[in-house]
Length: 115
Image (cartoon, rainbow, N blue to C red):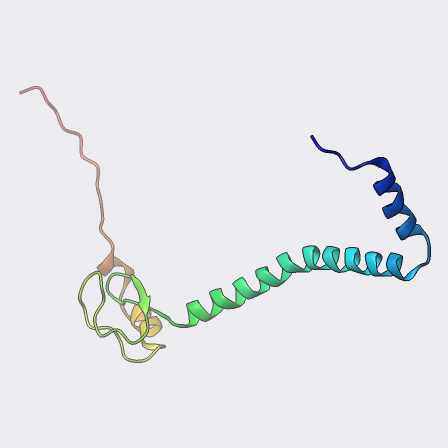
């Protein structure tokens, strides 16, 4: 490999240690790059969280099957039932239906295969 000569590393070290204008510019540049590398993941995380909350606020749940879809659709894409008009109607519709009406009860039975 082509390694830079030791004299180049010595010159960079001198620029960092000596209080010259070039050394200060180099230190400011290194500090700025380090700040960007540390702040960028935090900034992207915050923007992702805000985007997730905006997406959640634009979703509505089907009162029949529970499929989530974007507000403003007239029919559920999964079951075809008419979607509620208001954004709070889906929450009240889910509370109005008893859970026993929308769940399936499964019972286990023993099957004899002697025949």
